[in-house]
Structures are given as structure tokens and as C-alpha cells.
Image (tube, rainbow, N blue to C red; front, side, top):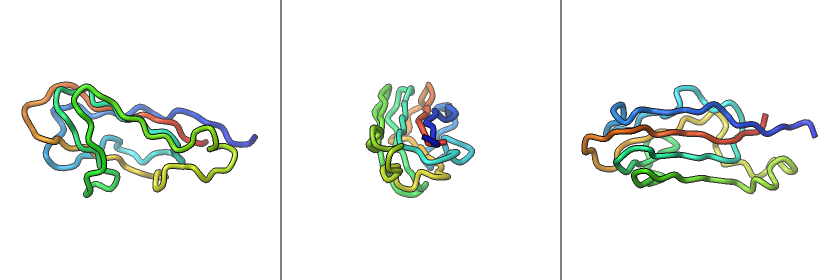
Length: 113
């Protein structure tokens, strides 16, 4: 098999840097096709995630995480189960309701090399 799976660089943003406007979590685009995303809200406030910087896509409660998988058991075999639009994506975050948060928000995942 020519393709290999690897975790990509861990990205984070401090709670104090997040506002009511969408801010990027990852400052550089994702390196290659992603088939698993994990977002961890390690803050004391709920957050909203956007994949385009405009639209509200995910809600994550305080001190919770979400994982998005796209048929991870089938990714390498057919390359048709990647998270749509993941190549070169920037993931954005904003507060659901701003109340002086503490903590951090993390983005991690796996991609095809």
C-alpha cells in the first residue's frame, strides 16, 4: 500500500484569544486529506465551530470533545470517504456566549499522507 495514515500537528487557541467573531484554530491549512477530526473544548464556556468562517456548524459544550470520522476502516482502500472539503481547510471557533472564559480549544486528527 502506497498511502500511509498519520496524525497531523496539534493546533490550539487560548480561551482568551477567542471572541464573538470566528477565529482560526489552525493558523496553517491542514496538510492533506483528513478522515478523522477531533475538537476538544478544554474551556469553561461552550463554543461554536465553523468550517468556512461564516456558518455555525458544530456546538461543543464546556469541557467536552467531538470526533468526526469518515469511515476510517475504508479510507485507505477507496479514498472516497474523506471528510468533504478537508483538504487545505482552516477550522474556526467563536464563543457561544462570552462570559470571561479560561482554558484552551484543541484541534487534532488523522490524515492520509
